[in-house]
Length: 598
Image (cartoon, rainbow, N blue to C red; front, side, top):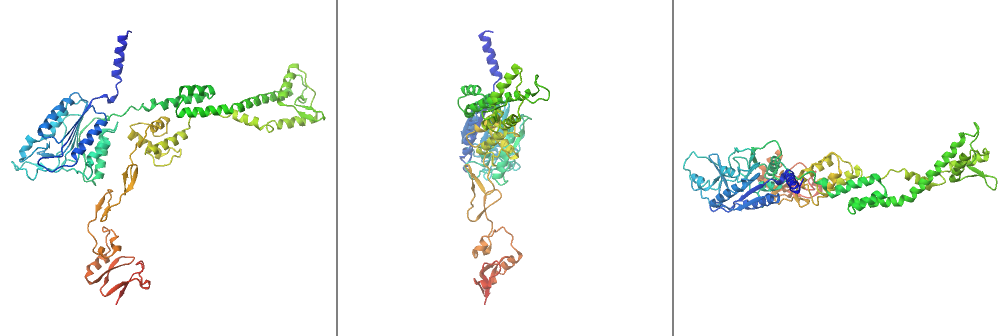
């Protein structure tokens, strides 16, 4: 095959192997805040800028961002973006500003619209159908996000040409006619959206959080957006999505390839390290260090190599002791060797009399040489004497106890070689790393339990990975270690709010209380006696009062203007009476205060 053919084959392979996120994605972002004939909207320009930055960060090929567009500019931008969407796979339009619904049709309002009559909307505004027509050429996905479900600012001044013409609050329900098309509203049809009290509206803040997560299906993303907006607005605003998609996951930002962690340098180091540990000698470890001189597994290999070098003399001593033991075993086995009489005692080669005539045990090496010489000549030695038998028995019993260094060397010689990190060590390391990236709150105790599985599932969700949560694998550990910052978002309990990487207690101002939505809400109504007694002012105004207390408030005109509280309730002091702190007159639970009457 010549060079040109090879080049063509390579080009074809590259074309086939292109990643899924190589498709063309385009977006148009419009934010109208400064209207010539309507009050200022504070958030749309901020929301549009944040959405445009999010889509650019997600790798969109084209992001057209326009602010405060009049009718002429808006018409020109839609025409230009229609050309951009013609050869695109994914086309997205985000609009924040005023919108209006008339006779079941939704319209987006430019900043220079006057809308003096209801029929002016056909000339001065742009229907939502015109926007859908601009993105219709996109091949795979068409998405329109309308953050315009606000009150109609022209409703009070707009003249009706036909009394039966309907101009309703919010926007009307839509049904896209093109497949793979979604229309997302900040609020359900017929309802209005809230701007909130922060830089961005609750709907835009939730979109920024979820819309560009890699691999997150759009239907799930808008579901998370709905949950956040309902929580942020106290269930007063519910976003809604119209249209349908197929059964496969459709993500605005495709997930990264799962195989990426397998190709990491640490994964390759781990694989080579495990192979070297299977051999477990100096040559194998030196070969690994030559290939991988630095890193975590290089440090492990150096520690293992130093351990082998330190144990080399002990292993040699253990080998020598093993050879001596084999010689002793051969010597003992000569008792039934040919050339000895049946029932005759074993040849006396393990002991010999010293100068004093007492038996002395032979060294194991000497015994082995004597046994070999006896086997070679075939001449058994003289039978053992009783003293020799005693010495031989003593020498045999002291063979291991008399040399503890040899016994330790034998024990070390049968020790199993070290292998890679155990599953418990991997689980503990994974738990520690999951705590670091904010996905696990429990302790790192090597017990891969249900809490650990949930924490790894959270990491998969927010990092775009798909590791098996049932076990702590080395691949998952390597992937978690590569994350330098927090991955899982911080979730605070009721009464606390997120402040960076910490939960801060919410302190409400005087006259307000913390409601179930974690917001400070103004109290409604006050007790009449609150201005008289601190004890009453500390009690919640929402707490139901006892019948007796309500009855006493009805006769407050006959009281002395003072309040007395006991363990049951608080009541006005009767006219002609006063309060005294004398403990002798104290009521139970009243703190030493008594009601004294003249």
